[in-house]
Length: 83
Image 1 (cartoon, rainbow, N blue to C red):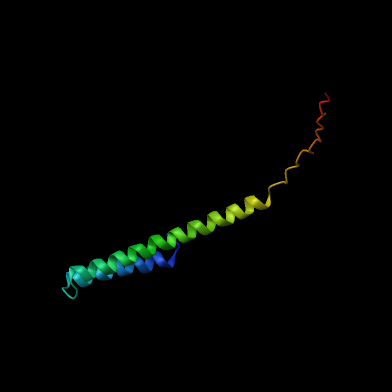
Image 2 (cartoon, rainbow, N blue to C red):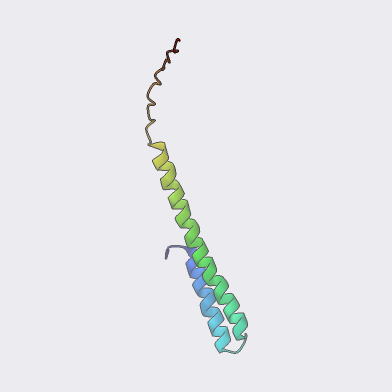
């Protein structure tokens, strides 16, 4: 997760928003809006990467499955009752 540029951009946005709030350049609502958006971007990117890896693993596992031989169906004959 730490190798992603998105993490560093998100952390920079949170730190900048906090600094701007401390300098009274933005309101608390604006700081929270920027911070929440940045944090959501980090976790969304992490989730997308995890799902890509899971999809690749599933595709690889599916390609190595051997076909199952179906047993041949036996023909059953029914004798008619006479009487």
